[in-house]
Each structure stands twice: as structure tokens, then as C-alpha cells.
Image 1 (tube, rainbow, N blue to C red):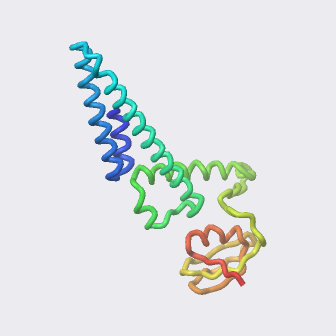
Image 2: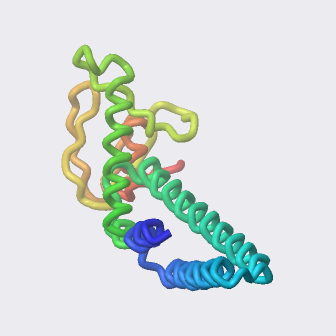
Image 3: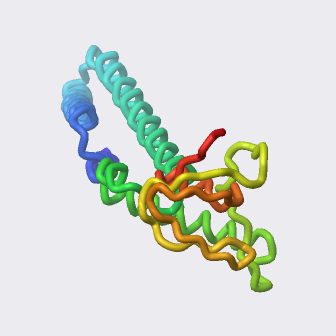
Length: 188
């Protein structure tokens, strides 16, 4: 119980979570006191209260676990939405432990992607985070929203991505930059 409380407090510093943990601590201490009293004085009338508080503790534990699991699923989804580099406003919303978990997930995913598509034989692997939706065409018209620098495509062509410049590029090369807000898809 104490270890569980410490882990959760370290993971997230939210008031609601802290209140649930304080409630759990109070319930646990009340139960300990009543259990000791029931043992020493033989008071069986305390058993229903002990059981009720224990059920409350288990319910709170399940709720906290579900909340933390949902939070990790959302953090995992950030890797697929934004790529390996999170925007500053998103990073600011995460705790140090969550950022550490994101880094481990990112590393694990990249190792998996390198193992696909012959990366062992010197290939680049397969980026499964591209084309989140089936493409209608292989090339798209994009407009650069900010100065980004050079972008090299497969045929060796290097394109300078300057603010307000427009380019006709392979969709798979642009999709992540579109999600990051560097490019926008120009629909004609």
C-alpha cells in the first residue's frame, strides 16, 4: 500500500490523485486500528466495517490503475501522432517519469522498426508510423509553415524547406512533418 502510494505520487502530481491516495491512507489506517481492536477485544461487530473499507480500498486502487494505464496509452499515442520529438507544449504537460517512459517506448519502437524491412543487411528498416491512413496518392502538394532546413528525398534530391515555399513531395516523406506542424497539405 505504501509503495503503491509512493509510485503514484512520483508519477503524477495531480490534486485529485493525491486526494484519493489520502483517502486510501485514512481507510487503511482505520482498518488497521479496527483489525487490532477486533483481535484483542474479540469485537466481531467491526468486521462488516473492515470489509467495507477494504472494498473501498480495492475500488480506489482499480480506479487509479485504470487512470494510469489510460495515461500511458495516451503517451504512447503521442509517439504515433508527433513522431520521436514531442512539441514543447506537450512535453511541458508530462512528468519526468512519463517523459522517461516515452523515451523507452520510442527506443523500443525504433528498434522494432529497424528490424523490419532488412535493416540488418544495411537497410533503413520500415517506418510503420508513416501513412496512418491509406494514401489516395503517392505525392502531395505541401506548403512550408516555418523555416525547417533541407530535406533529402530518396532519389537524392535535396529540397530547402523555407517558410511559405510549396513543394510536390512523396506523401510518406511529408506525413510526419505535417503532424509536427512544419508543413501543411495544400488541397487543390
